Length: 274
Image (cartoon, rainbow, N blue to C red; front, side, top):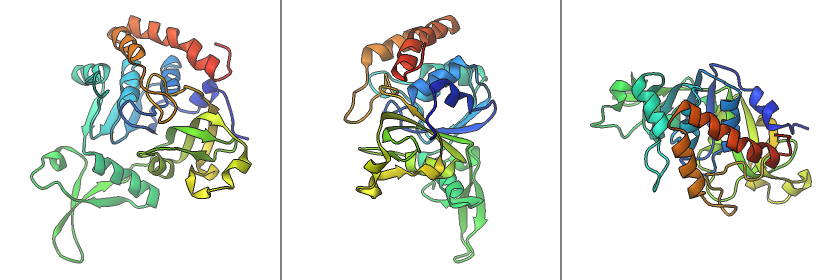
């Protein structure tokens, strides 16, 4: 049995570690978990993700991030850019390693395959290879130059799923985005789940089990744990709650108030005393 509380699962993540976080932009983000990382004062994290959004902004507001390697970071319409992320980058407290989403995926895929690097294409005319960690190698088959990116193996993949059992078998309905790849690239996974189901549930249609238990270190029962972001077929983006976050996160004092205001939701929903 791998089920544990939100607090204990968050304590698994140490300072200065590399993490990757499931979902995308404001869709299926493990929001309760990133808020708990901020409450616990985790710092120096290196986030690698093709398209972070609410997760990167919360962690930036909490001073949890040292660097982000990504293709884009935004909260989507109608909320626009990620202001705390942008502010930290402009102030120099957060290093942004600009990249492209497919190149970030390639770095994670190389890690998942146990390779030191992976070739990428489609960057003709782009200056990204000059500013991001790309390298050029001679293609042994054609003699042409090939662009490659390094493998990046996170310590943790933190994922929010629709359902899981206590052993860590997990399913995502709708678009799994990058989560399956993240679960293979990282050393270990932490799963937050809307629903805990019996292991027998996974016998039928095993191909739907995106993440098998062998990759999972911890399971957190987290109904509405992605709030205020959306989970397909469960709930949509909570616009008033998102705007409340944007208002409070403008200052360190306001962000602390936001963490205090959301603690009851996060912990009560997870069956833990606030």
